[in-house]
Image (cartoon, rainbow, N blue to C red; front, top):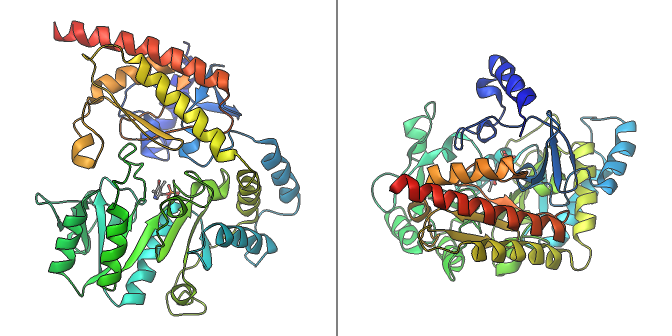
Length: 436
Ligand SMILES: *Cc1c(COP(=O)(O)O)cnc(C)c1O
C-alpha cells in the first residue's frame, strides 16, 4: 500500500501541530507507522491522500453511527449553512434536539448543550458539587471522561484510593479530590463511601466502559452504584458520551433500567459535528446559570449546524429495527473473529457490547483496567498494521473500541472477517517465530 503523500503530510504536520495531530491517538503512537491523512468519507469507507480505500471502524470514534456523509444529514446541513453558522442567540433547533433527548431519556428533564464531551463531564461535576455542597468525586480506573483536570487522574496502589495526577499540569491537591476505584468493583466504592460518608458529591461512570477497550458492567454493578449514591446523598452521573444512542435509542440507562441523576452526552447527538450535553432532573438543572448560581457558558454552544446534524441523526436512529440491524452486523463481526482464532497459541478475547467491540490480545476476561492492561500491545500493533495495509481501518490502539455503523453492509462485514482471519494467522505465525 502506498502512503507517500500521507508520509509527507505527517512530516509537515509535525512541524506545526504537536505530534502532527489535534488528538493524541490519531498519531498512531500505540501501533507505530504513518497515519493515513483522510480526504473523504462515504458510508462505511474512508479514502486517504494516496487514494487508498479503507473500511472504517473508527467512525470518528463513535459519532458516525450512520456512517460518513449520510445524505439526509448532508442535505439538512447544506440548508442550515445557507442560513448562517452561529448566532450567539437562541434558536428553535435547540428546543427540537432537547425535546428529542428528553423524550428518549426520561431521566433527563432538562439539558444544556456544550461543545464537547469534556465540557459536558466537567460541567456536570461542577453542578453535582454545587448541588450537594461536597467536593470529592469517585471515578473508575480506565474510565475516560474527557481531559478536565480532576478527571485526568489514576489510582494509587490500593484498591480504592485518592487520585494521583495522570498528566503533568494537574495539581496534586486537585487530583486528591478524585477518588479512584476499579471498574465492576462495588465493594471498593462502598469502602470509599464508608471512609468519606459526607464528602462525596458524585460517582461518574461509563455504564459500558469503552475507553479501556470495551468492558461490560457485571450484573449488579450499576445497581450497586445507584444504591450507594442514593444512600449517601451523592449523585450518580452516567457518562453516556459513547453509549448514548449507541447501545440502544436513548442509551445504556434505558437498557439497564437504571435512573442516574445526571447524564453526559456527546458524539452521536452531534452527528459528526462538535457537541456535548449534560442533563438530568429539573431540580438539579435549574441550578445552572442563568436560573441558578452555577456558572457555565459557551460562545458556540447549541450551534445550529451541530443541532441540525444531531436532529437528523436521531430521526434516523428512532426508526424501527435500527438497533437490531446494528446488533446483527456487530454480532456477525464478533462471531467471524471468534471463529478465525483457530489455535489456542494466540490468546484473544473478543469483548463486545452492542456495536462496540474490542479484540484484546489477552486470554483474560475483560473486567476492569487491571485485567485488560496485560494485553499484548506489540501483537496488537502488528495486527493493526497488517489490517490497515489490507484496507481495514481498525482503532489504532489496543485500549479502544471499534465502532460498527449502519453503513457497514453484509459485504463489508464479510470482507472484514476474511481480512481479520488472514491477518490473525500471519500474526500468530510471526508470534511463533518470535518465540522460537
Ligand atoms: C469521547 C468521550 C468523552 C470526551 O468527549 P470529547 O468530545 O472528546 O471531549 C467523554 N466521555 C466519554 C465516555 C467519551 O467516550
